[in-house]
Length: 143
Image (tube, rainbow, N blue to C red; front, side, top):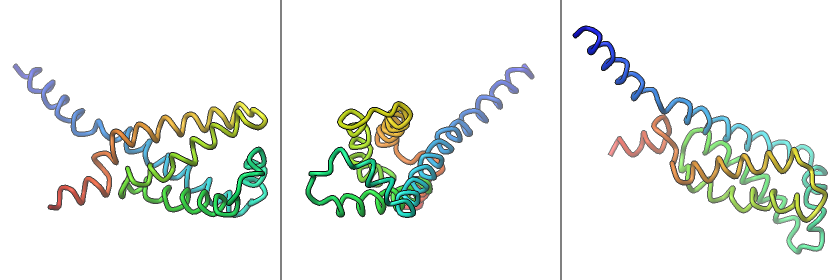
């Protein structure tokens, strides 16, 4: 009888804390995107080199500013879980472009793998949302 109570308590604890790995993954994704945006701003040559396969593309300066701003603001929003799905939608064209650039230009396996992992995570959070420990969840429960 006593072991049944302990198992139920452990089950309740596990169910209550099962969201932490997902939340940590969301925060890590947000921090990664934020740092990538800061890296693009501080090393604009890096982004220009990455976009070189698309050098004939009109609006290159617009794309540069969109990528940097979307990564910085989107990273912050994803990290806090604030309007997570909207922030992910803003990231998707950039990340899909990062995957495509690897096939159009020189194939760099590490960049391709990083882009694919981030793409999979973004699609996962687009479906799952911000998680239990996010600003989205907090504001939803406050209604």
